[in-house]
Length: 207
Image: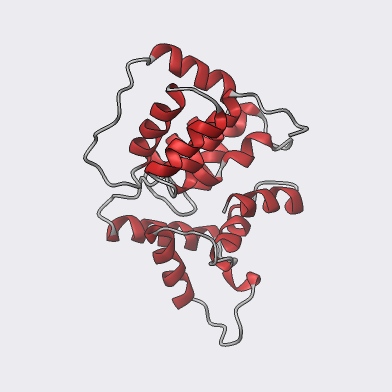
């Protein structure tokens, strides 16, 4: 799904929410969670096309997207603070058309394409702007991380972020940290660890 955000920014030369969502839904072979699957199913019901579905068939008005996302939040009893937006939104931080001052707003908008809870967007925001400095400051202020034993849903974004900070806080090297996270949770935590560890290591453009 990260590639879908990147392709939108490159091809449209701007942030286009409906276009990003159409790419998320059309490329269903990518890993999507239960919330996004529900949105896919609901939007398919509203698609009048009887022919083979194309990318354009998934391009809906923003008002309809907002309506379906609220329905998803209701169906899941408000538990839509999952970590998918945090995994897919970081290309926004590297887009030359989006300034640092606007990054918070665009990251929240991208998250709300599928996840109504503002917590999902807030955690996504943490993983995007000024990655290296943010992580460094967090680790300096919170060196008390122990192995998290939080009884919450495995996709709950704050839990995933807490787990990721635990792994990055026990810094060895990018490869080892990512491998440790992958053994614990390869679907939710590991991608975030890769983003944060890579930013902390200040990976050069050449790599």
